[in-house]
Image (cartoon, rainbow, N blue to C red; front, side):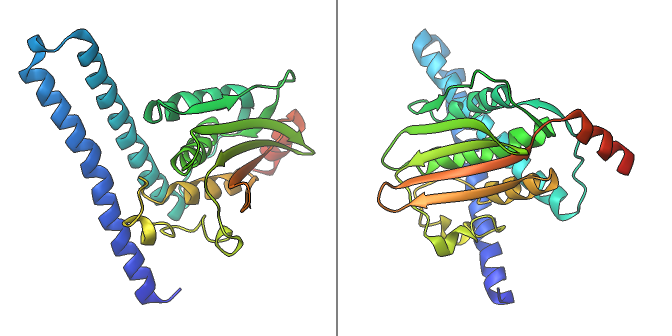
Length: 245
């Protein structure tokens, strides 16, 4: 990528980031002011509605801040990875709780397997990966308000499958969607929200935990599936990593 193109993309990113920060702050300020000035005139349902909006926009700011900080840590190789036994089903449920705040009219379908699956990964980094990808799936579910999530075992990996319907990624773009700033150049004309950093962070964190992410997209069904591969938890692997440190 030429320097001029990189600079243009970064300029677009800064513009996008400013917009992403300003929008929730404006919403939080507006609803807070309304509640303070009209508290006695608002019924309980309205108060709850406004508080839920404030909560959702606050979470949006928190996610954005975490993404920006994560990019800085990734670029400086200062990410602290603590590998532990991570319950796959539990981490998915926690991630759905976080993402669903911003997608109240969506259905996040997840049915855990009878068998308990555990990954050898960092629990916080695993959550960051899944939150970014689940949020991305909901964001691009243009013709559907359903996101399907499954977890299954495949050899040495436990795999998180996140599926949405209504979007299609062309094959020549799949290799680029995990690049930093890639989405930012097209964001301004897009109807979706986001800084364009989520997939880059997810990809880099997965690699740092000896995992990987694959993408499948079908033009006919408009089905897109993200597959997050993380190593299976085994005591032998923990011991070997400890010895090699």
